[in-house]
Structure formats: structure tokens, C-alpha cells
Image (tube, rainbow, N blue to C red):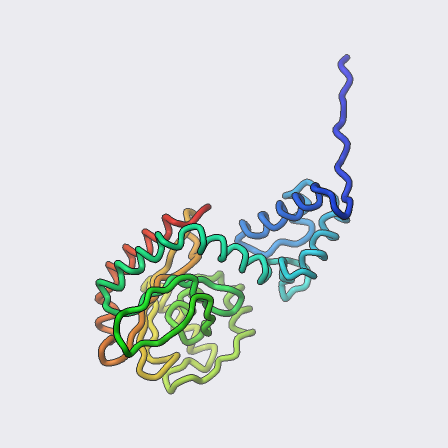
Length: 262
């Protein structure tokens, strides 16, 4: 009978490569998961003992690569990990995405953005300005609130009900204009409307005199991972004009989705 030779388990030395690789595998599992993961879930997925996974989670949480869910038992991607991913994505395909946004700007005549979500904010991942002297200036990496922007409301509308309730309860529904949604029930009605339409608008909710529209960018699994947004000042850019751009915006969203890595 042939002797079975067991491969010794790699030790978690402070500088060991195995620790680094396990941490990267753990972050990858958290990033791929559609729901927050707890230590037991990660033990199964990584085939690692509970003490090892618990130790890795504690270290990654302390360094802000993981963020503990409000229930205290599960983890999601932390701000440092998200920032790393967005920087890699932006640097690797920036010229291609900017070309797609620039084509849309030529059609729309207004500034267009590629937006993603980080925590409870919508974040500009890429942006092409229109040539108008009157426009809103925001840098790549700028954060805007979710409850009163077209892209932010779009992200909220695409969430699972439990996740949406959790996010809404944590948001400060700051009054920016008379049109800002300031109550959760009213905002939830708006989000249901957005989910049914498949696009979102900002009717001077973030800034007076500014209208916007956003459509989803989806990954290969159909998950909303970003948004194409366009905005401009009233009356130059009305909601009617914004809605008329939907075919071109959806085409741009499909092109941007093709630049995303699975």
C-alpha cells in the first residue's frame, strides 16, 4: 500500500509569504461576495482554521482593509481596499474610459462622469468636463451624497432591501435644496420608482439650478457596480433633455462595463 505523504501546513510567521497570500485570498473572497461574510463563512471558503481566519480579519480590520458590518459579526471591503481597487481600475483603463465619456460629452454637450459607491457616498471615478464656462467643477475622487444625487439614488435603488434599510438608517438626509428628499419613506418611494424605470434623475436636489441623470453600469453577473451620470445647469440642461439622452447613456454604460475586470 502506497504511503500517503501529507503536505505540512504553512506556518503563519510574521513575515511569511503564506500570511500575505492568505490575506489576499481572504480579501478576494470578501470582494467577490454579494453579502458581508463572517469568520465561519471565510473558514469554509478558504479551508482555513478559525483561529487563523479570526487573526487575519482582526489585522485587516485594524489596517482598514476590512470593515465590520453593523451586526458586528461579518465583514465587507474596507476603505483602503476599495481605494486600492479603484486606483488600479482607474490607472489601468483610464484612457479607454475617458474616450467613452468624451464621446458621450460630445452628444450631451454636458459634463459626464463614471461613478461608483464607497460606503455611504457616491465617488467620481472618472470625469470628462464639457466646454461650457458655466459648469460644476468636481475632481476625480470627489464624494457626493447618495440621497440627493442621480448616481447615489441609483445605487440605493439597486441594493437588497435589507442593505438599503441599513444604509438609509445611517445616512444624514441633509437638506441641500427645497427638492431634497428629507424623509426615509419619501426617499424609499423614489427608489422604488427608480428601480422600475432603470435610471435615476436629480431634479435640483443636490444643487439648485442643476439637473442630472444616471444609468447603471453592470458587471457580468448583472450587479450594479457603477453609474454613468450626466449633469448640467437649468435651463440649459432640463430633465426632458436628460431623459432624451438615455439611449446614448446606456450605450456608454455598456462600453464602460466591458472595461471592468471580473
